[in-house]
Structures are given as structure tokens and as C-alpha cells.
Amino acid sequence: MEPQVPNFCRNNEQRACITVCAPSKTCTCDCEEVRRVLENEIAAMNLGLSVGTMKVGCNGECPYGVLVGFPQRGFFYEQVDGEQAKEVVSGTLAQGHILFDLLHIDPLKATSGRILFDRSGFIATIDDSFCMVKVAQYFLQFEEGVSCGKCVPCRVGSLELREILERIIQGKGEPEDLQRLDLVCKAMQDAPYCDFARTTSDPVVTILKHFRSEFDTHVDQKVCPAGVCQGLAKELEEEKEEREGEE
Image (cartoon, rainbow, N blue to C red; front, side, top):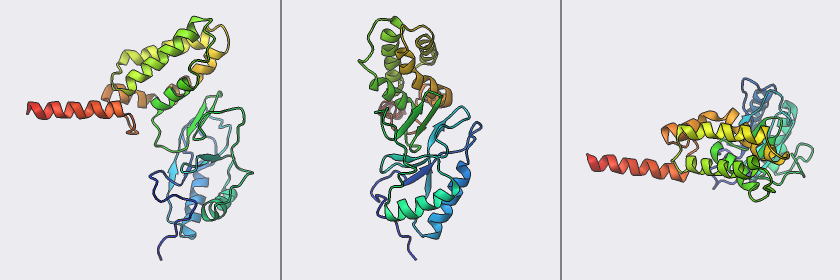
């Protein structure tokens, strides 16, 4: 029998219909158990879906419990356990019902519904299609123009962080840029006039801590692991054309 893809999922989208957070060395939640239940229930109902993976960085205590995401729809469920995972499949995936008891709602944040960030050192993207360098850039752009400009760490630091990230995304990053990111973030954390500089740099600090390898790959190999940095793709294409011309 052919799998019955639910109407809740959009067949013309490349993104997964459902994702779950992944285990890590510091992860203390039951994400593997929730994934197992989701996969078993999806198979039992013949929905023809695979369970994707989020990009998650945390310091050991996830403030949201097990996260389940819906990339095509742009929202998260939080604190999901194995029993609730069954209802996620039967209610949300199969019938399109939103389980409001599980729905993540944060009225104090106006950032993208596809990214969660907490100053405890937690960050999650709703699936693994995100480039974490661009996520860091996104948070800085979100705060652009808000600084009062009274202190150098905030006024100059936020501008320099944006310039460094833009160079890395365009394929022009150098190892020194990564060192500079660390130094500027430290200055914004340690020596600001008010808390705004810390708030602005917190996402960058968190992303650098948990996803440093993505930054290294952008700089050292001129490759975007997520394949979304057009500057890097162009850089690689030009290098290929130069090599072919030499041959």
C-alpha cells in the first residue's frame, strides 16, 4: 500500500515535515526515545515521512525539554515525552491539529519562529538546513541600529562582528577573523556601558561555542556545510573555472 502523506505536510517543499532535537554529550533529555516513538507511529500509520534533525547546542540543561519541530510550518512543540509523541503523529501530522499544550510560545521574543535562543547558552534551529554563521549574522542584523552608541564595545563591536561575519559568508574569511570574533565578543561581554552589548553578542558567543567547526569550514575550506552561503559557492565555482582554464 502506498504511503499516505498527510495534508499537514507540503509535498513541494524540500524541508522535512517533522524534526526532533538530537542527542549530544551534554544533552540530558529523552530525545532518542521521542524520535523512536515518532518513527514507529509514523510507520504504523503509513504516513510515509522521515523524522529530520534539528541543530542544537546546549550546556547540559535544555530549558525546553525534548523539542519537536515543524519546519514547513515554522513552529516548535516543547517538553514532549514518549506518550505525547504518539499524539503528535495522530493529531498533528495525520489530522493537522495543533496541540496547544505543547506549543512553544514566547511573547517576549520577536525573532524567527524557526530559531530558539536562550541566554543560558541554548540555541536550536528547526532543522539542519541552517548555516550557523548566517544564524549568527541574523541575530546581529536583528539588533542593528538599536544600540545607543554610548560605549565603544557596543557601538564599534557590533559593527565589527557584522563585518567579520559578512566576510566569512562571502568566502573572504581568514583565520585571524575567527580570533577577532572571540576578542570582540569578549570585549562586548566584559566591558560594556550597559547590558545591551552582552545581549547583542550572546547569540554569537553561544553559536561559536557549539558550532565552531562550521566557522572553521567556512574559513579554512571555503565551504558552507549547509550549502546556503552564495558567496562561498561562487568562490568555489570561480576556482574551478580557473583550474579548468589552466589545464
